[in-house]
Length: 461
Picture 1 (cartoon, one colour):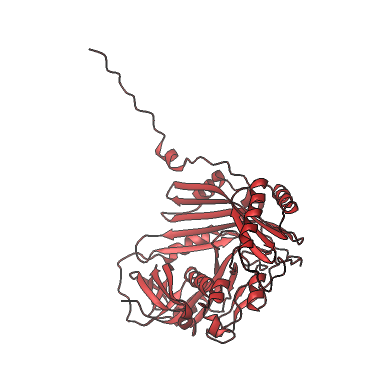
Picture 2 (cartoon, helix red, strand yellow):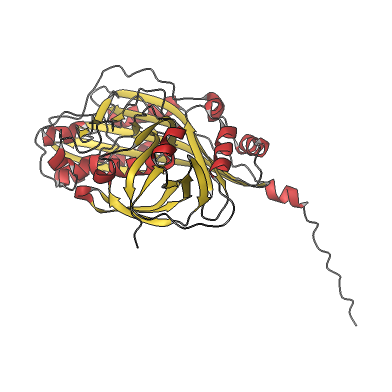
């Protein structure tokens, strides 16, 4: 009988090592000078009447800690937008390639697209804003060098006791060059941090975002999540309608919804925005002041838009009255309105550095004005179902009763359906402290907002 070989099991790593060992990828971005040189070559050899190249080079990291386990990923991203003006017509091309030959081919593809389009009135040339941009600190060298090992060590050093911690950080290089001598370059970093306590209704969540790593107070965010977490049994919702205090995170989600569905250039152009009927008419509470400002260090500043136009403060809503949609220079020319420096590439414009201005109410005053109501920690599953009145639907999460001027027991998650025009028309209070969230791209900006109290919420049956 042949001898059967014994199979020895491979030695396993200790459990702790298995939980935290993550190979760090080698992710490097092209240097600004190298990118600029490639763009200059493309511009010099372009056969189009005018050419614009927007280069977005990004290193994006995400890390999540639960107990001693760290899940971590670092990935590079690159988007290059080529736009040409040829015989009065505009064409565009998008690629992820860094090769000069591919980009030069992209110019020709954009020219082919331009030649089958109708000439655009009001756009004799590509934008050429040569105004000096504001000096804003968008780059944190420490965050730019943040690798997986450093992020892992930092997360493990934080005083979490069962909370889930999540960090998202970016390093970006943004260049906007065109044949009309626009040369804009910027390096930017940003980090967003979120802590969650509990998993059932009444769980706590807190978050913030910053351009610079050392200005992020992660310990305070964790403590806030613990404070907002309710243990014990789930209680019943109060009789509707009831007042509500919305956390800064919940307000940020609503402001983002308002921005994208009502203030974007495409929504105004297509007529789905309520601004078409309510421009310069007070429809919100007179204390409701929404501005976009890429020069304000209190948020996540960025000095220019993706046409290279210098950023400046823009009131979107002042004393409750909508003032303007967000427009790049081409859209402004077509619509006959002033440009607002909000180009995001493609056929749209959107605010990227939003501030819902804070009020003067303390946390205790907000709870007092909503006595007998509910606190909402955050909103999920947001959607717009009636754009002209900003009718929205969302799932209210992390909800707790407000009793005797304090947060009480947890209540079930519920569906909230209403109009932002109605809910923000008569605010009961606006908090004095704000939190920030990264924008969709993670590096061009973000949204800053305080907690607010609204008067009457009725859960959807």
